[in-house]
Image (cartoon, rainbow, N blue to C red; front, side):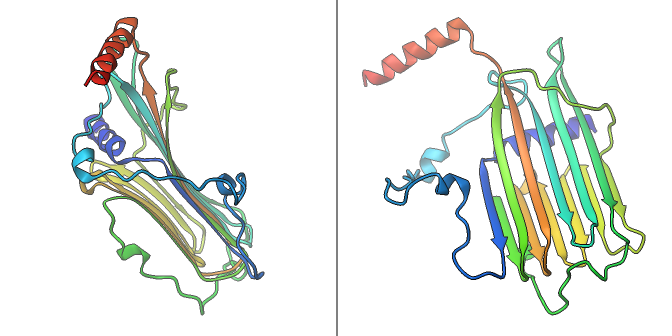
Length: 268
């Protein structure tokens, strides 16, 4: 199981990229609020520039996996949470880690948690709208990262976020439990939460009377998909995925080698 999880983590590292999207739906008219990274800039300032890169350039790019010269470990966190207006909260989260121990060996572990708490257990005040429909998102297939949000209702808040960061410090993983899956539901079965880590990927799903939230990571197909379908009112939903990569510090000799290499490249 450890070898399967290590291969899974390596594949995720090759697919993962920094990407986020947020959506807010409300009954009030007018323009939706700007994201923070856009609201922080004046409309009159220079527009964000994007440099297009051809496929033949991307095809020559390479990376390092766990145990390589640069990336020595990683921690992957996935979390999905749904808060209904009747006080019920559904949560599914998990952590997959592959870090080096003191003797340089890669140690893999996985922790999962699923819970459904609060509320009365009744779906009467769940905010669901039986006349609203959100469908089609499950059939979308993208090579890479896809984030889909479908909302039919008022005063809802939903967000899909995926990010990657680098840390030269040692990564500490809380807990020692090694549980590849977890599931939970309320007494009536109307709200369910589940998460599963396996050799084929990671699956997270929340099901409520007002819709569903899923996260799917399928490294074999090169897919990371986040989906929100909200058919109701006053719902607060979030999908979050974070990949923390531990990088090794470059030695003085490596810094000198890179300097020589850059000097030679500049002479061309």
